[in-house]
Image (tube, rainbow, N blue to C red):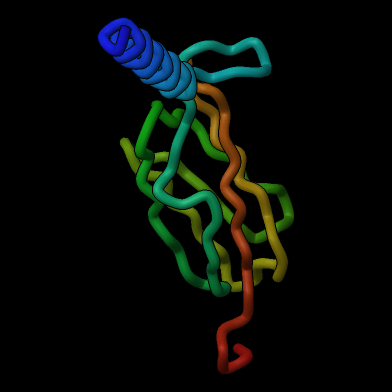
Length: 122
């Protein structure tokens, strides 16, 4: 009797582990907007910049093809290989701006850019 109960318990645990493993694999695929493929993942989802500065953000997953910053924000973005370079011009407007990054087969992504005056108030 103990052997049967032990076997049932072991089978149940293995089933739970298999189900948990399946859920993890499905997280890697894109969903929504009808696109398949990988999800674009970046080193950072949100960055802080002061006017006149730039920052490179590494693409961790997927392939970024183009990047577009909001017009009239003073923020620019460009894709260079597996890196995205985001810059805030000296006349960049303070506040949070969204840079939209498009991937070929990968789902599009957004990086939030917070433009703040530096501590010296420049």
